[in-house]
Length: 400
Ligand SMILES: *Cc1c(COP(=O)(O)O)cnc(C)c1O
Image (cartoon, helix red, strand yellow):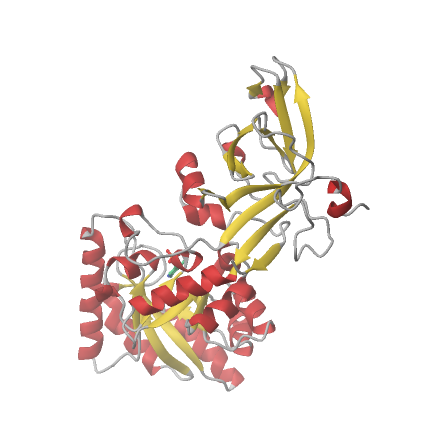
């Protein structure tokens, strides 16, 4: 197999066109990859940590493979930068971090119910979320059988209508949990439904419900060791919501939950998605491109084929609507995005060569394409774009 160096040998400006074998490529001739800027992650965590009061801890939420960034590398980086907790959705996500040698406390944000799950949680020292009395009873019973205690986190529903005991029943629920053997009540928490909205009415209502529930819990004689409520948006929106811990996902990765929260702290996107040109050809006016001929050349057009497609996480609904960067210039994508490949109109890029790097998300020269740009085109949110990048794309750590 030819290396990219061999393929692109003879290119006079190879350096400037980034056609050299990319450092860290390991000679694997990768057609496409995700670059994770660990320095950007460190910067984001430090910025967020500086924004918090000294007694507020920061949890890096690393569920869904750290929103597509790679859970182990992100967790290690975030912990070195000042995070002291990690949050995952599932037990396997937690085990992956433990197997990598991570010893920081890990909160399981999802709910667990079976004896098998309790055993796995106990074995791997994960910290479960308890949402109902029934769950609490199962956990206690299984843990007594194992002769092991576990810190647990009681979840209240203050208006998200997702996991948690209804806030009106919080005091009874926490009383029950507190009284069960082998459960150590480590925190009480809730989750906000509209923290990214400029209209703060619902968020304030949820906060009031949380405060009332906590007041009732305290009246019943229980003083919770830790309280938490804030996701990224709430963290940026209002320091009153920080409590003892903030659970920050999106902002860790350098994206803002909403435009009006952009000026609070300076964040840098940590993910760039890149691929290489795999063929360049000229087509005549009237020639169709890709499945369904969504694009027909109006002029003599130079087409570049790029080795990345919807199976890698490029949404097919961006077909004919997205732009990419080559040599710092904005280039339109044309025709349907296919499973493994997509096409570009590179008529305005002189002498483009096979092996040159295409930036799909990220910065090249003065131009930048963000997950927010894609989300706006698609009518979705940047969270979904980030965690859409599949394992077929290798994650490569860089520090810019
Ligand atoms: C995913 C999640 C978060 C992080 O949300 P971001 O908006 O990405 O910061 C926080 N808390 C809970 C319960 C979550 O499920």
